[in-house]
Image (tube, rainbow, N blue to C red):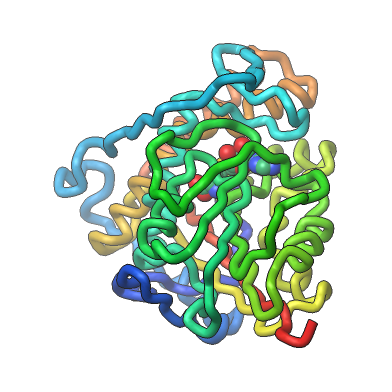
Length: 350
Ligand SMILES: C[S@@+](CC[C@H](N)C(=O)[O-])C[C@H]1O[C@@H](n2cnc3c(N)ncnc32)[C@H](O)[C@@H]1O
């Protein structure tokens, strides 16, 4: 299983000292200028040091991550209930649940990603342009959109999702709509910045997605895609996703995709994250602990329905997932995962 949980990392850049502080309110920070060369990134992940002294039992890390529950707008939205989980009913391809358990997991995931990026919500150099309208596709619980809106009250932020799992009380400049990003987009305005994070399982045709983003960007506007191979930990997950037309490793190809569509200044960062508190250093341990908790609690959400769709029996799936969870807790296994962040700019003259 370790081979399956271990990420196939092609290029990785250490995030330890990535942008030390979150941007100040109302100020856009410049993004990093270029991705590190692949070999350099691989060297960094290879050099994550295993902490032989302390692992799981680090009490300094706290015993749990508090769960955050948001209120939900459920009017007129249909849900499906299967094997104890709740799902949205409008898009047959997206197979992850949208219940409170999943919402809590997304909150944890948000904290992990902020930790990985040094507290930054975006890496694109937004200080180079005037940003008045931003779009977050597949916003989930809306945590990214809400924080971006709070930090930049002058920007109108729109978040879209298949599920109404966003809180009701949000900053005045933040709004949410139910919308399927695989359909033709029909927003009333263009955006200066389009953001999407962890949407790999929801999009089959990324070229179409990138094309629509290009068309809905103002000239000079930025598209930023954040995806992780964490959610594709197993070859089995990738294989079944393939049969559904989903490329579970799509994030690793977004750079080329953006260039092909005509984006310029395309940059990529790959930030490694240990799965479990096996690496040296408090920050690495905190990250590893949170990431492992996220994956441990997300394994059922991500793959149970998927494997059932592939024809496995419920007993087989439960037994397989139980083994995966056991191995995730095995301190001798030093798995790692990357977070890929890719951004590009629509040319000013187009
Ligand atoms: C793993 S969650 C990530 C949520 C959020 N972007 C974040 O990083 O916290 C993926 C979200 O994408 C949404 N989603 C999946 N497919 C979608 C689609 N075709 N259109 C819009 N949203 C979609 C799901 O409902 C879910 O809330």
